[in-house]
Image 1 (cartoon, helix red, strand yellow):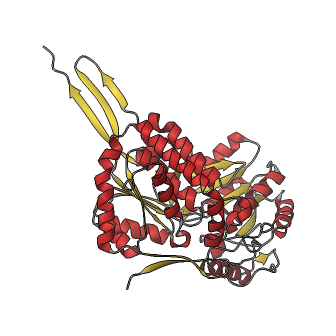
Image 2 (cartoon, rainbow, N blue to C red; image 1 turned 30 degrees about the horizontal axis):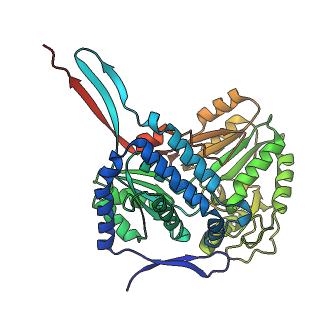
Length: 460
């Protein structure tokens, strides 16, 4: 019997999409086609690859009206937010803009005797394993620069967002990207691991859970295949005594609750200087009480269901455990909270780091808020985590932000903003968030390998 992948819609629990997985032989044949197509793709002029990739991006944009509704059905994001094409295009455009410089030969020196330089060559076949929470933007982070750099790409998307890879591959094919250069696949975990272990791919980029990242590294063990991982976070916000309070509340609470809290760089912990704590909390509660929890297809809905009942239950469990241990839940249960995927967004106070909600990744619409006395206490609490993706610092003093940021164990330091991926900066993390780096010049360096040329001239 053929195994199938099913996307269960969080709207009503129905099967929204279903696709059969590839058998092992079919998957190996598909990957062989990707390898066979790679040399010709890499031989095309860089500008031609750039133009084709950007045409593919534009073709995805032309599908956006349909995509927005599909995303609501697949993972619950309200249609009022219009999908992801803005960020999708921004990231692709930046990587296209910097490609020539990022991929240029590094000139080491030339004289009458020697010419020395370093080329950057594509790895070959790149496997992109993309998550469901921002399914288009997270995929394009690697797909666009990998293709531009001359790699072929095999995209395996999350079951929860089953249609995204199909959409992207269809769009790119429609503008002339060869079918074997960018392929979407439906694979189960076992076949994926077998392909990695067989050295089918030259580079693997995985965005997802810590457990998933470990599985990728185990599969690649001994193959010398590079594996880049981005495994989420427990990102803190720190509101200093000189912060712009209104801006801090608006941005941090939005960073905690947007997309039903389902963001790897969402704000999951907030530390507020004791002089601002009461005012911050009052404003935060008012914002969350103003949300409308409901069907994401309804225009008035501002916060939709979580992507699955299972994900929502994990957040409920964390909240219930915290309250049982002495935390205070500040938001009353909303009418649409059905005990399933529809979950009341929650602010918790009287929390401690002994509680899972302040330690484990929640990946849902809940945030704990703690009072701190100053920088040293805030830094110690921010670093008391197994994750390190981003940290959001709120102050009017840029020198202070840089000083505090230097002491925080994280991949990105924000000042007076949060929950944003700047494609000009390396997207990276530390600790259990994983290793590697996407976007920016460093993203290109990770998607290519260096090759050195040391050429001795013949002189007479």
